[in-house]
Length: 475
Ligand code: IMP
Image (cartoon, rainbow, N blue to C red; front, top):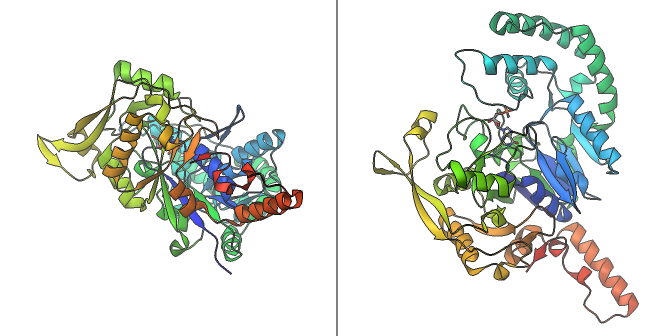
């Protein structure tokens, strides 16, 4: 049997590129969506018919009927945050039971991870990263230090008890000595997490087996990235990064699907750029223009509510993201935010001390010396909202997108001009290469064909379009 199609969705900037919405739109054509990194530091916003969902741990595929969702082994799972999200989804009528799976090898975030993180972030002499305070970094530290607690261990009450007791003894001493933190009580922690474990147990599976079986059965799998390239622990603006492998390579280690099973890498970039938290951001702007981008783009963190720093597309970074991830398709989001501008600056290169500089600095301080070279493209001063196809976009908006494409090493496959599912256009080549044929679109196509044949209808039903072209405008 032919193996199913695969694609990784990866952020090309510092996160918040709109991955949630894109995963939601594309989930129509994938059988399974798997998260591979990060934890509930992510905030993936999806708006369906005016109803807003903010998902932090559960892959956005859960919102699409018939699409299975997997939380892979590369994710760090906060059991209480997970259960809260499951409750929210159940209350919204979303099917989670039997449809959502959690890796037995994912590591667990416990309260002492948050305690250590809060202490470290505020300690004198430490670099303040501006984290989301969710305990993500300390949980990954314990994983790499081989003293973490995995989901399989969470379900083993003896192991859970001894791990919590030992960890609390150690972490309480460290946190008290270093940060003067109040100690955590291991007994009440055990009670709370043992109760949570019972509720999580039905979701737990060997998800590497599940995903590989799905692929072997010809099902398609999308890997949902969280955070982004420039927040990757290895390739991002260290130390102002998150603690996981957010780049496309993480999709393999973070799910147990082999690298040679991954066919497409879809990089998501905003039509401008934002960053939340501290760290380098060469093309950042301040003042009125930043306020305009923030207001039009609603640039406030989905998880923490923090206001996002705003700036222009940075081509050296986009080219770097293309190289690190092997991006073969771009999705450009939030194009409509730029609709009112007279001109749109793009950072086309870096200079240090007046000299052209081609690499991405490894040192955060190296970025401080970087001066962006800008090219100003003419604005289009027309609404792009609701544009049905690439050709419907104002000419100057098309030129802007073609410029980004030429300069960044990959083709544009999708453009998003608003938060709703149908404010998305898919370019035909992308739809054909990445999305077709899927098992779902094929069976939907043949059942529609059958039913219109039964009706004896000669009309060309819109449902006869490939599934890749429904729910989004593929022209
Ligand atoms: P942590 O992931 O909470 O450790 O935070 C590390 C850095 O990554 C901080 O600058 C956060 O603001 C940033 N970060 C983490 N998750 C996201 C995200 O989903 N979107 C944007 N920035 C994020």
